[in-house]
Amino acid sequence: MGPNVPNLPGVPPLLRPFGSPVILPPPLAVADTPDLLPPSTDSQWGIFFNGLPVVLADNVIDFAFRQDYEVSTYPQEAGAFQSYNKVEVPYDVKVSFSGGGSDAKRQAFLSSILAIVRDLNLYDVVTPELIFSPVNITHADFRRASSNGVGLIVVEVWLVQIRIAVAPTFTQTKTPSGVDKQNGGIVVAVGATPVQQSALSSIVGN
Image 1 (cartoon, helix red, strand yellow):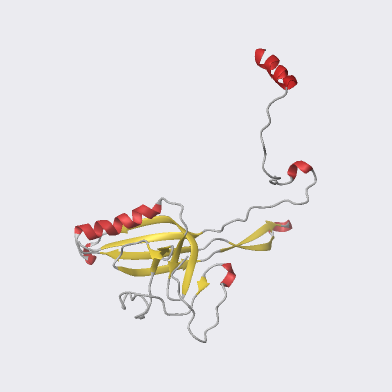
Image 2 (spheres, rainbow, N blue to C red; image 1 turned 180 degrees about the vertical axis):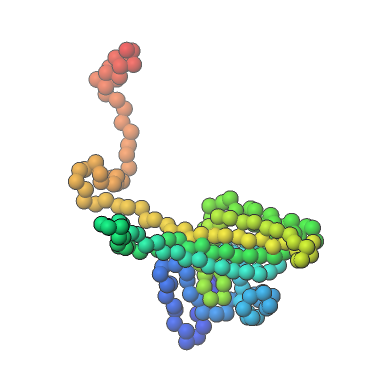
């Protein structure tokens, strides 16, 4: 989940478009450098986990969102094709961070990103207009260029939308074996009868 941001007075809660990003009314907390992204003195950008930022960067310098829809087609006679379906696929989000300062500060910046690349946690990408959630990191790269100075590192982080499937439940199945198991109460272990012990001994003895 992202930062806990209450609605402004007189602003009704807004709906989640397409079941994906959550639209929140401004403002968000803590200012970023005003000349990096749209000029706003009360907006925050970044990757969050349980409401806390996970990347120890100085600035967010770039943001990108990509949403694809696939249209299925099938061949017909005489080389023609017919389109019959359109499917929304998970979206991608890219956030570019920059970090500088001392060697220790740059090391902490890179370590904070490398620590989250491999995990399976669900994160929130926060922008002043939208929160993209839940997402997971799929790619990260960084570069150092002479044009930016030897002390500035730029890291690009790609994330993909995670769609959580609901576990299916079966109530009316064709055969009893297809019904989900249900807890019928506390099960108490009972010792084997002499006949059962005799049958077991004959099996083990063979």
